[in-house]
Structure formats: C-alpha cells, structure tokens
Length: 101
Image (cartoon, rainbow, N blue to C red; front, side, top):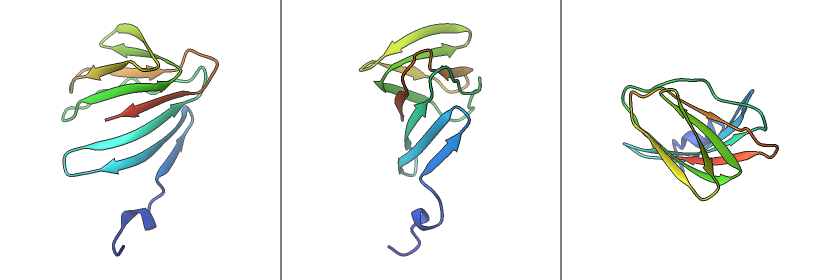
C-alpha cells in the first residue's frame, strides 16, 4: 500500500519496562498490546484528552489510579478516565500482557 506508515515506523516499541505493539489506529482510537516484564512498571502519568480501557490477557496487573491500587487478573478489565493519574505494573513472575484501547 502506498503511503503506509508501517513502511517507515516499527510497530513494536521497546521500553525498559517491556514493549508495546500498535495493533490498529483510527481517527479517534488506538489499540495496543502492552507487555510488561516481571517486576517492572510504567510511569505514573495522566492524559488530558484520552481515556484508556485495559484488558488483561495474560498475568496479573497491579493498577494504580489516583493513589488507589487494584489487582486486575487475566480476563478482567479496568477503565481509566482521562485526567486521572494512573500506572500499570507487573507484580508477578511471568510477563504481563494487556490490550489497551
């Protein structure tokens, strides 16, 4: 396909905590597969203009939203409203896999 961004940009992005893969992106949405290595965590951050819905595919996620920490297990999901400070962590010994929508 002409002008396909996949030709210029890698779909997998590696970070110190693991990686993410851009699965699909449209005008008003983005879908990523996030893998978090055991004992690692993403930064504690917030977004002004977007919400996130995380679905745990494999492992157990430790999710912190505005200081409240919850465990989200495989097959479960959690919604993070825009403007709320949040973090995703892997407290387990296996790789955590999450779909972010």
